[in-house]
Image (tube, rainbow, N blue to C red):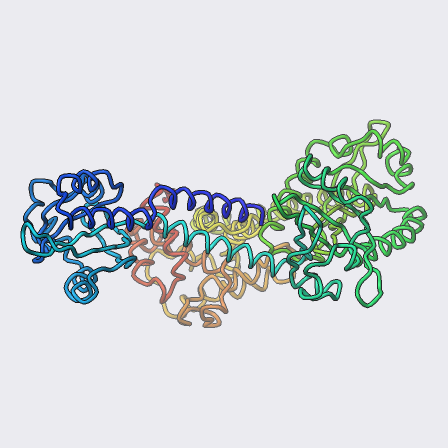
Length: 622
């Protein structure tokens, strides 16, 4: 509202200046003088007055042709002097002056009235743009030419109208803010303290309507008891604003409310803003009562409870910090900051998380009751560290704005140690699985060197596809392991069939197709972090259900099996076999591209083609 008042005052000043510089009264007086002089045939004297008139002025004959104009006409409307005298007024400036309203005034109204004053005309000129003009005209009979002439005075009121519109808009905004403000607002005279205006919030807050308040003083409607009004006004003159906190006000109904009062100097008036703080005071008292209860609880539990302000400074920490970190609570409150509490890496994590939460707060897309949990390493007084789990959430005011942080810290050092041990155990298990896989690969290689080499190369391609598809690291490792032993079921097939140099019979081919089931049977009871048995069972299934052994379709097939299926086909076609020579990598890529979406997964095929054709992947074939 302060900015609106300033804008309104500036507009009033500019409007006054404009009115003083160029008034309609001045033009009317000038027109009258010129008309009198012309009627008396004091032609030269009249023309000199025409030139001194500050606004544009034209002299027209009875046919509306221009006899004379003053300099200000040329200056204002950018008309060429050589193309003015003797011209029909509507032809001026390449007919820019063909203004419908002007035609009506000169051709219809003026002949009937002999004069007109203060007619407003709006027009867009080619050279000077949009203009709003005020027109005054007189008809005078000239004996020397035995005819009437017309004096037409023009006042450019474009800027005047613009400022007037801005003033009205500023007043409208000011009134809107005044009437819709949550604070009660009272305007009163500086001289006597009499109220001139109140807004709707005052009636709602105190019970006094505008009619009941106007002409009264603040004391009369229970606002403040001002013993020395002149002293108060002197303070306002010196500092422009004064503030009273926690002021009780008696309402019309006789009840008291707690308020904050602001008085601001507004030239001849004083603005008094009143804010009802009763609910806030009640909330503060309730909060204090709760804090006492929570403090009693916090002082007697093993976990460390702390409170930070929004600058991340400790305002409370429970006594159990002595056990966790070796500090007395007073030491933490007076000496330690968050940076001194956490190790560098944990401090970076905490600061990054806090920044992210504050950014979410700005967007308003955060759940108010949400809490966060972080694992942070803290510094102890003896310079050792302790791992903690910190759960924290915001403390909020009545407007749900964060004003502090409440946190609970728990010692998880033992849990972290157990996690390290568990990770070590998992790593040992992974190595054991790897060793087992290597034994299986070696067993297959002894039986069938072609199959062993095929598995290793298929595993390399499958891993590359999975990596390029941005699968998780765990899935990538599972695909690599499964691909390395995907033909382990061939151990149950006679070696003479595996290494047969001629085309297989139908019965022999059916035996070969059983290797997926045999591989599943071998691995189904082997404990593993990955579904190795199922991947191997599915690696000959196809997207349209034409594969084997279970004719699975689309979503029934694991993504790991879809990747292995493509890698298996590409390597097999690109490599030499006892019963046929290698078909080459291009033939293999054409096969998967031709059957993309039918036999093979589209995304897997696209990734495989990109690896070979765009990223330079090479398959070591034999």
